[in-house]
Length: 249
Image (cartoon, rainbow, N blue to C red; front, side):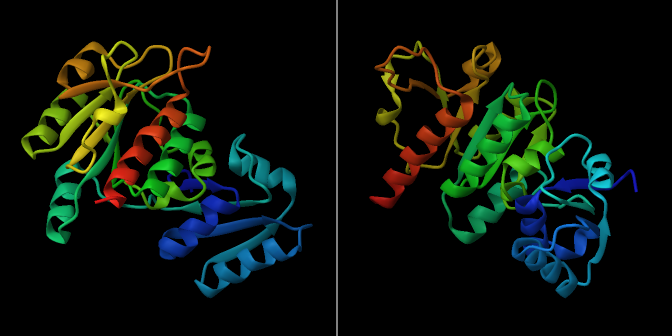
C-alpha cells in the first residue's frame, strides 16, 4: 500500500468520506476509543462500504508517519480535483462565475499551506496555485491542518510559475501581488474582477520574476510594531477583501 495517500485526523478523513468515499481503501482506528465522535466516523465509513480496522495506537503512529492522527488514519487514492489552470477557468466560464485564485510562491511549511487551504475554502477560492519547486505538497500534515479543505480546493502545482501567471493574464485574470514596499494598499484593488492574489513566503516574499509578472502590487497596512504577517494570515486578510467587495455588488 505504499502508493496510497495517508489521511490522518478526523477532519481530513471525514472530509474525504463525504466528498470521495470510493477513494478510501482502508480505515484504521484506535481500538480503545469508542466515544461518540469515533463511532460516528466508523458509521460513516461503513455506510460507504469502507473497510475499518481497530488497531493499537502504536500501529496508527506508524501509519501516520509522525502526523498527529487523533486515533484515526485512512489509506486512500489521490483525490482528483482540477489538475490544471485551464480546466479551472473553463469550468468557471461554463458556470458564469468570476475567478478568485490564490497563488503561493515559496510556501514550504505544511502548517502554513494547510491554513491557506482552509482559508481559501472558506473564502470561496476556486484554486490555489504553487510552483513545484520551493513549495510543499499535499502531505498528511497539510491534510490535517487544512481540516478537509484539501478535498475541496484544487491545489495546482506548476513547473514554471511565471509562465502559468502569464497564462492567467491571457485569460483576463488580474494578478495582484502583496509587497511591503508597494505604494498602494489592498483596499485600492478592484477585487470584483477575475483575479488572483499572489503571496510570497514570510520573510523572503515573492521571487523577483513572480513580482515582475504581477499586474499590480499592493501592501497590507501595518500600524503596529510587527513588520509582516504570516502568509496564511495575509492570505485571509486579502481574500476576505475580495469576499467583502463581491458581496457588496
